[in-house]
Amino acid sequence: MKAKIIITPKKAVLDPQGKTVQTALAQMGYTGVADVHIGKYIEIDLVPGTDKAAAQQAINEAAHRLLSNPVIEDYKLEIE
Amino acid sequence: MAGTGRGRPAGARAAGTINAKPMNFAVLQFPASNCDQDAVHAVRLLGHSARLVWHKDASLGDTDVVIVPGGFSYGDYLRCGAIARFSPVMQAVKQFAEHGGLVLGVCNGFQVLTEAGLLPGALIRNRDLQFHCEFVHLQTETTDSPFTNQIPAGKILRLPIAHGEGCYFADDATLAQLAANHQILWRYCDAGGSPTEAANPNGALENIAGICNERRNVAGLMPHPERACEPLLGSDDGKWIFASIFSALKARPQAQLA
Image (cartoon, rainbow over all chains, first blue to last red; front, side, top):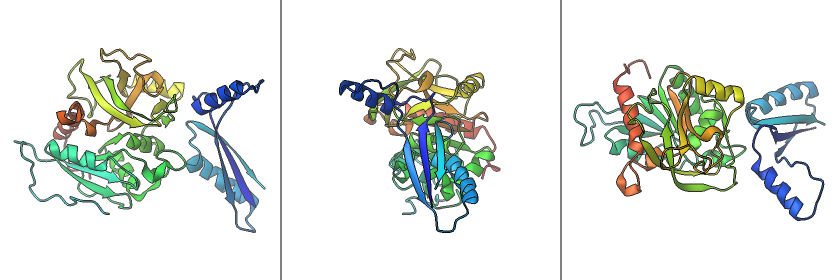
């Protein structure tokens, strides 16, 4: 079982990397790009037999305390 | 390495201090701290006592002030300061701050203090994605703090910066609170003292270079006062910030701080 956490900058936070990549894409001729946001992807391997609901709760807590900074980032957690 | 100069010799007093008992500065040392020795040097140069405290130490010992120095603690992994905040020494720093002890975070130290929740907001990537290593000018917004009380009115400080993630961010409610409580200590400005967009090296909201907490005993700033305490280094304006700390300590009872 794996936990997958996708962390993205909050909409209100300046994302200069996203803006720079957006400009590069436009210069390369890729049209139709409205916005680019650059974040992080974290994958956590869980030991076999882990209870999914308990893992969900624990990783949510860890994502809030360490994996993301709630002041500047949002995250999405999936366990599969 | 547990740090040089640990354990202040009894009665140690640097040349030049006349009547003041030397104050004890604890300078934290994380893996990849790189301004720790500069901070120790600056404090000793100014006539006080400084020692390094290793990140695994759970106690600060006999300490009047904590400096969380600059650098790249824990390789800046995950986010700047994100790992350092969980180190044993930071639990001691939290307690020290809760008891009213003075804590100053410089550069990476500022990042560590925001990650630890000791200061509001966050520091993100510079707006131009460049690492900035240069002198900046700072306007002091209030002298009502232990970190600014000796800075002369109207004095523009010239201090060096060296960071890639110094863009101060906080949501609107936090910014309003910072302003209402006079927690913004320094803003980037031009040589004439105007906080212009061009004088802002990293895109920090409202040109914010440094802030303090509501209780005013914890402060952080991106510029490096410890690297600017002698004219040989291009500026000695950093000493105004240290002089403020010395003055604040002299004015308060110290017994209960440890």
